[in-house]
Length: 187
Image (cartoon, rainbow, N blue to C red):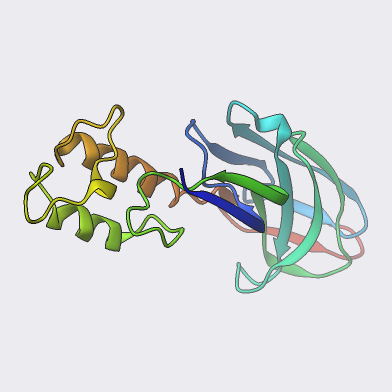
């Protein structure tokens, strides 16, 4: 078994379950008064959604730059004190993530080249040993990743690799569907 010791903070993407986040409000068209409070709301979809952290950011230039609001436990809402600015190109972004100080875990089986990243190089290695069995010139036991291992590199191994690759490509982020406005001194 390959073991990794990693110190990291990552946007969630290594979970074998349904994942997602949807920003509910503000989601475009709102007009907020600077200095007022506004309840930012979102829904998250994961078996362990309440164990995730959320980072909330806002932009006053249509998403070119982002300012942090808060990082907190995921509870589905946050009472935001609207900043003292004037802009009609505001957006809010929600990011789900896990913070891990020290993790000891097996390296994903689909990382056939052991570089800690399931990527196109792993697909190339699997393709080079496609259809092979022990004793064949192109046999690579690291590519026999189906459970249980069946001593042939085939679509079962490709399915495992594809799932791990897709899991690593999730961005658990949602941004306002449209811009909203913030104005100082009343609406």
